[in-house]
Length: 249
Image (cartoon, rainbow, N blue to C red; front, side):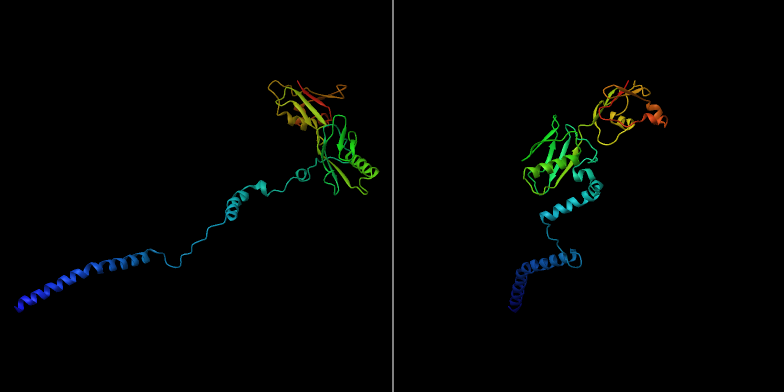
């Protein structure tokens, strides 16, 4: 009987141990997972960067392109900054189709750009028609100033006249060239410089016998491109005048 009791007690103990074993295994596996995670993390603190705002993202994307584009780093040209064509305000003679920039100090409503009409006049607010053709920008500014005073529109007017674009002074290239047509004579230009606008000669162009017609054909000048391009007979490379026709046969 004692042996039977001992056997029964031992069997009960084994059953109790088996019943406790499943509850211990999950605890061991959880501890093992924690230890594995701690081993997989890099040493030291982990810093998480906050997301960038929309304005910061825009500055980040623009910076590389702006730094790589040298054109944006260059200073603007003087003509673009002022909106004026570089001409002498005392000697330049205004003509039809020229674009004028007129600035009346502290009078934005009277300032702006005005195109000279075919009759040689411009129309300004409160003044009306003003003769602009055949006058220099300085002379036109003085006349506008006088009109503002005489009309008692402004007591002490300050007027500035600039040439925004030259369209009244043109020269023409015709004949055996790649790009014939009319070209604005904005700055002093020689025949050689003017021919650059033609885009080169055609195959059968006679570069030795180029003719410049002046004063409606009353004056005929001859130009040998071959000689001038080699530094010979440079006296042929005259300054172009408004209305000159360069003809390449």
